[in-house]
Figure 1 (cartoon, helix red, strand yellow):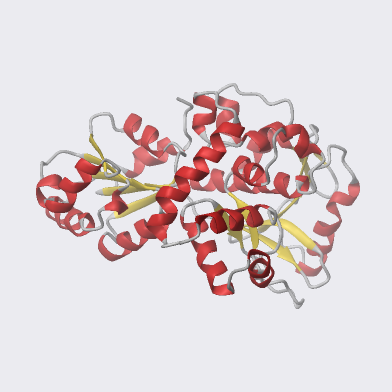
Figure 2 (tube, rainbow, N blue to C red):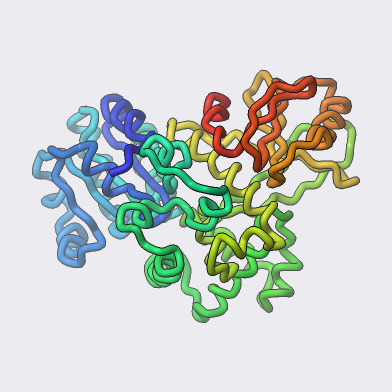
Length: 388
């Protein structure tokens, strides 16, 4: 088992709250992490039809044994949440239940209704590059890493991405999508996902996506919500601070896992990625997803944004630390150019220089402090985790 960075926070919060919730995409390693972290807990998966029937028909007996419990895919039996609330209030003890699920919307909805104030909420994303590095994994190029993706089973069972992702998509469609929404034409939904993959790193234009997919704008909004709720995509929001300039208000679309995006783009090898029109967007996606993992796996919320004005000047990522803003530019090029800092210098000029040390992450290997900011090679992005 590759050691997960979230484990320390998970164990800590289990000594503070009666319930700890772990959500994340299917196959991100939630069950493995939880069961290894709490080996003495009774484990129940509500994916198991027999267990689910028992929980549905006699929830009080199911929960009332007095044992500390792990309940996997708990959103499958929403009736349990009210009973969990009653039990935790009566016992007033920490670490009674560890619950997990792969649909954040359904789980969050039930938590807000029944367990508010009683539960710590954590998110486990696929493996981080830093976790792979800590396990001794090496990659000859960032294209290989982006193409392979980060789902644990790929590494644990040495599965070719060409075999893993089509089967993953089929499982996702059959389980999660049908639970979240009654989508009649699943082939159309997969085509919609492919269109989203083709927009990786781009502004989300709902009307254009609607026209290309042949569905209404409201359906686009609904399906985007499904993909967000099941941790397939995330939308990077524009930074809210306005420096008296007209700013873009649309979010940008990214995938939590670049390997899945590559599969949807029907790439068959990392060599194909090297000349692909979306190489820059996928490299940007890789770095941003790593920044999100560094936050979520410490139990923190997303603090990443982007900035773009009406003239097209853009900062790929702005980390908002409350007292300062840290601008980050992301460049797939392996050769450094001083022009990499141009948009940062422009942004600093109109913002009044309220930033921390600017950063450029690029596809090369050199790390260096320059007069304009810090240059970071892609293999050394672990140094950015301190920004979380």
